[in-house]
Structures are given as C-alpha cells and as structure tokens.
Length: 161
Image 1 (tube, one colour):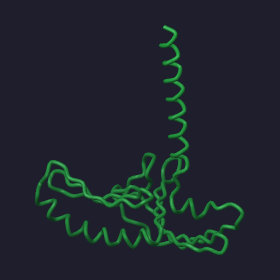
Image 2: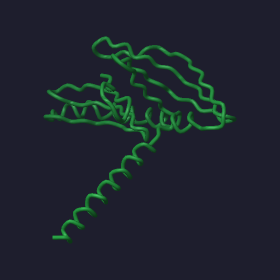
Image 3: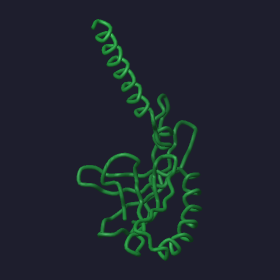
Image 4: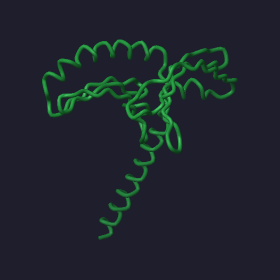
C-alpha cells in the first residue's frame, strides 16, 4: 500500500512539472514582429503608413498598413492587417520575406481553385501558413469557394472572409 502511495505522489509530481514546462514553452513562442520589436536596452520606433482597406464579406472594414520598425540600429518592415473586434483588434504582422512567400502561394492557390471547385468535394480546404501562423486560403463547399485570412494563430474572431 505504501508503494502505491509513493507511486501516485511521484506520478502527480511529474505530471505537474511537465505541464509547467509546456506552459513556459508556449509563452516563449514569439512572432517575428514580437521578437524584433521587444528587444530590451534599445530604443524602438514604430512608423505606420496606412494603405487602402481590404474588402471583406459582411461589410467589415479591414485596415491595412506598412509598419516600419526601427530597433536600435536595425530596421524591418511588416505588412499589417487589422480586424477590429468588439473588445480588441486582431492583427497579423507579416514580415517582408514571409510576404514574398505569401505572394507566391497566392498564385499557386489561385491556379488550384477552379480545379478544386470542379472536383465538387463535400468539403475541401487549401491554405498557406506563415511561420508566425498567419493563414491565407480558401475552402470549397457546395460547389463554391470562399477565400479567408486567419490573422492570428491563437484566439477567436480573427478570421476574415
């Protein structure tokens, strides 16, 4: 009986230690924007250049801009898409090299779309995901395709149709 109690204590202890490790790992995951703009000990400057709004379904106004970030002597550019929410905004910050890959992916997705619609599946989804979790793609349902953006990897109300 005493061995069973010791085993249970060890099991519970190891599970709680493991769950704390997982929590710390998820807290350390940063987007390229977060990693670049959150350096300590340097002055960071944000400069925004507003662009035209994106058109979306349901008349939701989606803001876009280029954000230039100076962090110390380093400089980087991000294309940002901002979807206003009831309590907070969802924002995708797409680093320049990821944006170039995204443009290539759009061409491939556009070429696949008509073929995917013609195949008339019950459901089909075709998408591209950046390293930071931004998603661009479409799904086919009932013989029609619908394009979408998923701005952030985590959270709710971060999808734009």
